[in-house]
Length: 342
Image (cartoon, rainbow, N blue to C red; front, side, top):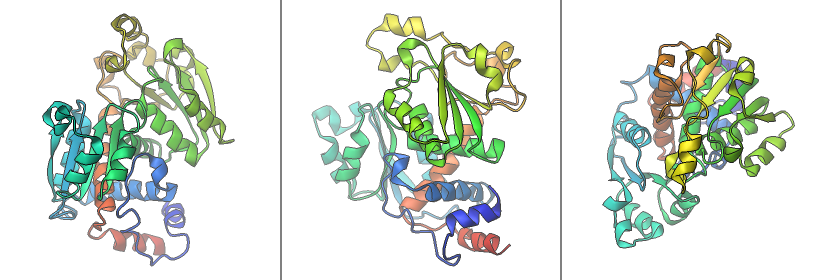
């Protein structure tokens, strides 16, 4: 997005208005909780943070983040924690329900009412859909959803949007293929729903019959006349049409029947042979962790963007954490105002 378009989007009326408190006190259960203008500003803040690491290192001095992870996570939990540490804050929390009072039967509401007395912001992951909403209603500090079951994963979507922006200098007017587990894949649900708010995206939904996209997500696509989708089962047939290929793993933890998991997990494997059929500019995204759905020989291909997503995820969480606690990034406002005058 150009400086002029960004300025129009973020400062529609008064260029001198401060934006640092726009998200102060806001819980982010889904990205529907914040406006497209605020999402755009988070993208801009993340770019600023990346080029001003030392300058923002004390933005959140004195702040404390709680990471309440009721199910296993490596990247997401460490990314949230690293984001706060790089902003100068501190972190407390747990990494497994068995390490919390949930193992004694404590409710989510009581846990959040308690933890709210200790911290300034909470990042929570839970295996049950809707848990983050319950937490946000109980807490007296902002709650950021770090994934609730097969429902939503808003900060992964922010990482995805930042990666699209860095690769294509836009997040619209793209043909995006989403491949693999589209039934339980909360990352693809979040991404589609958010992109539909911006519009002008063509989705190609690639999955076996057992793992197709839920109807409520399809309805979201249909609700925007500038967006469209097709459902297919063969990756090879469509890979040459894609600007972006978003791979997902078949999630063993979502299956009650291990035989079904074993039968479906190897349905789609992206390798260099398939990549030869794709555009040279295509970007391959994956929320990670991968199992075997992307062969390791793809890692060295310049189209592989999934480790770039990891970096972007940390930057976007830095932008989000500082915003919801109301701490302005040093130098950010003056730079934006300068850009508006250009």
